[in-house]
Amino acid sequence: MMASSDVDGPMFSDLAQNPSEMDALCPSPPGPSRPQRNYERISGRTGTSFFQTLIHLLKGNIGTGLLGLPLAVKNAGLVIGPISLLYMGIIAVYCMRVLVKCSHHLSEKMGRPSLSYGEAMQYGMENVSWLRRHSHWGKRTVDLFLIITQLGFCCVYFVFLSENIKQVVEAANTTTFNCQMNYTNQTDILVPSFDSRLYMLCFLPPIILLVFTPNLKYLAPFSLVANIVMAASLVLIYFYSLTNIRDPINLPKVGTAKDYPLFFGTAIFAFEGIGVVLPLENKMQRPQSFTLVLYMGMGIVTFLYISLGTVGYMCFGEHIGGSITLNLPNCWTYQTVKLLYCFGIFITFALQFYVAAEILIPPVTARVSERWKTAVDLLLRSLLVIFTCKYGVN
Image (tube, rainbow, N blue to C red; front, side, top):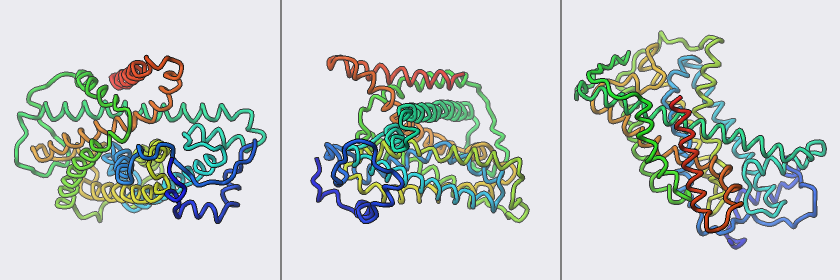
């Protein structure tokens, strides 16, 4: 366990100086009082570092939703879209910060090293007299929503991987090194390949092997590589969009009221990293540093969301597709962008999958003998991946 001198930080000094604020936000659960202590992490030496956690946070937020933001800006308008994205980013960071503070406070009150989403909800409800008897249902409800959300992302990733790889393969014979402006994505398909569902089945074995990784710490090198290749693909997308940008004077500054819900849905989907906040914080070696990770990571993410959404819409205008990659020219440079981004999404699958696995698998493995724990764990992970693939196929 980490010594108390190792966990002092600005965040916890703030809690100590403003106990009334935290008590009002998350009052002590019923039961014997515990002395206030610094927030500590059991087995902290095996946790993820500051840099590893930042990599995971970026990886969890930069996914397929980012590519659809130019269309979202189109639905909201060239002025209202970026402003709305900034506002949503601020709200998201604030909610994440409050969530982490509540988790810390309730962990201290309950004498626990860390809390999951469901446990934070359960212990929070125990502070409200008329909700106390139903607190276990609060935990189950939050866990259910997290499972649906995270596995839903994984289903989308199967579809994204199969469709993009299929498009690259089918257009391979007509792909050139001449990158001309392409507004309408009129890709020539010379040799039709297999159905996209067969591509999903091809991805099934490697994804199963990927999710066998037992700890986020071992995924960090792969996340780093994925971040690098996705950053390279984003640089190419930015370069093409900026060098082919058009006069935005004719683009609508404010979208219609009926299209704004479409913007909102796309933007909410883009902020897909909310489910990994507490798991990342719980696995961090020095959790008191997570606030800085959160501010840095989400600051970078929000900037990317606003800039790519705005620049992409200004470049392609009314012709922008559901994913900006669909508007890129049919040349090898930008076909490589699709391949690089697919690799990044492949690694992101494991990070999004980890949240659901941490909820579903431990209660099952706790009921089996030590001899069978590993086998049951791997079997359940395989079945969950097959489940997401099945729904992607459908």
